[in-house]
Structures are given as structure tokens and as C-alpha cells.
Image (cartoon, rainbow, N blue to C red):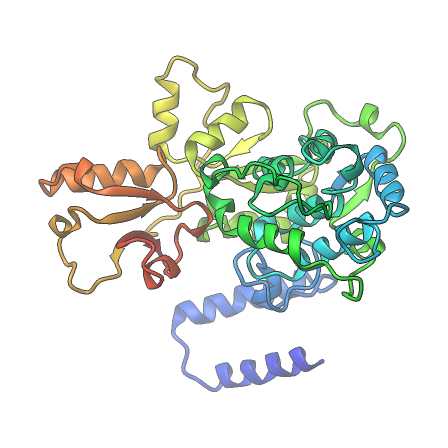
Length: 403
């Protein structure tokens, strides 16, 4: 009711102002859309595009298809509910998993396009703890292979090697060897330390957590039905979805998110579409080649390079999602940097090695008479397109796009 009242007030203010022709046309289009969607009210922009907005205000996992969890994982979870965790002051191993999932559900350090899979990973990450300190992550990952993002799956397999001490309570036990962040996808680097810190040290018997039923009700996962695997079309993902892969969560994804929200794919007779984000073109092509992605949005440079390579991907061009007049800017954080020549010896953020902007950066530098080897290209992954990397001085310059 409050949102409707605000909308009416905004509409009255808009009606009272002189409006040029384009605004009248847009207003008529929105009225037509609202009339045709009367049974499906439009939501506010923050709820409409949660993947493009911050976590605050988003309390439900409704923009993605749920992860289909096999019954073996559920059996492991219920077994873990009867095992006292040696690291949690009397709570069970399953309770610890629920604590971790509750933290990930609310955490600002989890990118929204990873949140569903991070929550599901957290729910089951330690359920096989008593089967092996070093191997229980692999045991859980075996059941989630092809169901959650491969970046998150790598964290699950190696979560006992993220830098924390042993969780068995034995003081004299050697901690597992720490994995280098370089062994994980760039987009997950900022999640490694917070996940390890909470998993190893922030566990208390009096700490509250959400029940398993909450995560199922909110759309994070559902249990696989008997014989569902055999009945599912062989080309679909294990979640029963058509996987649409993209190299970043930029404004180019807006048409896809809008189509998902309006149910256009289902109206066309397609299965539910699941959006997955990769660290650039080379990784995206790898997912297509392995059959883990059915549709992929990829830049021209990495696609042509792959087609000309020794193992071209089994793919063909079917269309373009290029947004006309969407300008990309190479922005510097230091106001003293005004020319490309001044980037010598500096760090410039790109999506990933081999992505479109890595080609563009080399071409721009060469055109300005700068040897590309004199500039360090820094893969940013999920941070690509964010001005935060300039404010935090992680790089000296990076590519940005409106808005």
C-alpha cells in the first residue's frame, strides 16, 4: 500500500511537469505494459533487478530456478543432524551448516549471482565431515556437480584449505595446506577469507540460524523427485533448466532479466532459463564446449580466436545482444592520468585474460605508442565494471560502462 501511494505521488508530480514527446511515448508504453500485466504487478527496480542491485532489501531467492538436490545429500544432512560438531559447543554438524547458510543468505560479501549456489553449498559443505577432514568437501561436491556454479563447486572441494586451522578441536593437529587464491576463480577471491573465517571461528551454540525449511521455501533448493532424473530431457541441466551464460553482470543483462521476469521464455515453450556468470570469454567457451551452457553471450574477439584455434567450440552465431550506443570508458582513478601514455607501469583492470577488453586495451595502448607489456592487465572478475576498484586503489584504471 505504501509503495502504491508513493507511485501515485510520483505519477502526479510527473503529470504536472511539461513532457517532451519521448516521455509521453514512454509513459504510454508503460501504461500499456501495466494494463497487460494487471494480474502480475510490476515491482520496484530494486526487487525487479536484484542481480544488479545490492543485497539490502532482498530477502528471497526468486530470480533463479532452485538447485535440484539429490536425495543422497538430504540423507547426509539428516545424518549430520545427529552428529555433535567438535567445533561448535554442542551443536550438531547440520546446525553448523545452517549457521553458515544463514550467514551467506544475508552477507554483503557474496555477489548476488553466486548467492543461490553459495547458500546451497553452505547447507551441505560439512555433512560428510566425519568421513574425512580433507575429503568431505569432495564427497559433497560429487552430488552437486552440474547443479551449482563451478566456481562455487571449487570452493566446496577446497573449503578445508582456505587458511583456517583444524576444526576437530585437537590443538596439536596440523591444519590442512592452504590453497593459493590463484587456484580459485577471480570472482570468488573476495569470498574466500570471509567464508573461511565464519566457517572456522564464528561458531557458537547460542548463535541463531534459519531452519532448513526456510531455504527450501525461499527457492534456494528443492529435493529431486523419484525418477525425475530419467524423465528429464537429456540436454537440460541437472536442475532442469536451459543455461544462459554471460561474461559479466553488466547492464547488457537487463533484457535477459526482464524476459525472465515477464515469463517470455516459458511463453515461447522453453524450459526455465538459468543465468550463469563466468569470468570472461575463454571460460564461457569452455562451458559451451563441455555442454554446461546452452546459450552464451560472448564478445567477438574471444569467439573469433576460438573459432580459429585448434579446437573450435561446437557453437554457431544465432543473434546479437549488443546494445547500440552503449559506450565503454577507460577511466582512471588518479586525476593526474589524462593520457594513455601515462599508464606505463600502471595496473589496468580487465574482466579476464583473453576477454574483449584485454584485446581492446592492447589495441588502444599500441595505437598510442605504448608497448602493452609496460602495462599490467589485472583480471577483476566479479568486480569488473565497478568504480570501487578505483576508490580502493586496487587498479589505476579500468573499463566502466553506463550507468
